[in-house]
Length: 345
Figure 1 (cartoon, one colour):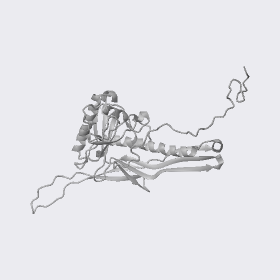
Figure 2 (figure 1 turned 90 degrees about the vertical axis):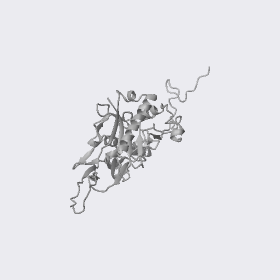
Figure 3 (figure 1 turned 30 degrees about the horizontal axis):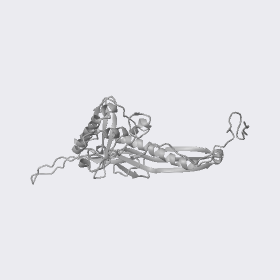
C-alpha cells in the first residue's frame, strides 16, 4: 500500500493546513417585525416637534341637553368643561458599537452595513413594544368627567377567566367560539361609545391566529359570509367580527411587542404595566385601535429626531464608533379609541 503524502496534514489532522474559505453567505435569523411604530394607519397621532418637554392636548366634554326657552326669559348659559392631557418626550434611545481598527483591517466581510441596519431595527422594535404597551394601557383607562359632564367613557376591555390563555381559548372550535364571542362584545361596547365601525383595526398574537383556524361555523371562512377575504388553508384572516386584522405580533415573552409580562424595568412609568393574569386585569389577546372622524387616536407620538445613524473615527482609540439614535416619545391620547380582550384569573 502506497504511503500518502499528507501535504495538508499536521499530526492526526490530515487537513489541518487547509483554508476555511468564505462562501459570502452572511445571514441573520428572522426577528420580530414592527407593527405600530411605522404603520400608516390612522390609529396614531404623529407630530414632529422642535421644542418643549411635553405637549398638551385638549378634550371637550359633552354638552348639557338642550333646554326649552320662552322668549323674554334670560339665557344664563349652560355648563361646559375642557380636560387636558399631556404627552412627554423620552430620553434618547441609542444603539452603538465600537469597531477596532485592527478588526476592520483583518475582517473579510462588511460589518458596517450589517450593523447599521441592525441598529435601526433594534430601535424600531423597542418603540414598537412601547407603543403596544401604551395602547393596551389606554384600553384600561376609566371614564373621565369634569364639572358633572362626561369628557369620555374610557377605553374598553373585555375579559375572560382562565388560568392560562390556552385554558381560556383552547386550540379548538370552543376556543374559536370564545374569542369570536368576546370580539363581538368588544364591538358592541365600541358601538355604544359611537366608535366608527369602518375604522377598527385589530392586532392579535400568533396563538390567537391559530385558535381562529378552528372555527367550524363556516361564517369566518365561507365566501357566503366573508366574500373571500379570509382563506383557511392560507391562514389568511383579514376581517373578523367587523375588525380589520392588521398583523400577528409575537408576545413579549417570545421577543415580540405584544405585552404579556409584568413590565417594571422602564425608567418611564408610562411604559410599565402588569400584563400577567390577575384578578381584574390580565394578559391581552387582542388589541383594537380606531381612528376618529375628528382625527382622534388612542396613541400620540412626538418626534424630535427620527432614527439617525453616525459613523465616527476616533484616532485616540484607533477605531470607529458607530451607532443609531432617536429622540421621541409616545403616550395615551384618546383612550376611547382603544379596546382589548384580556384573560384574567
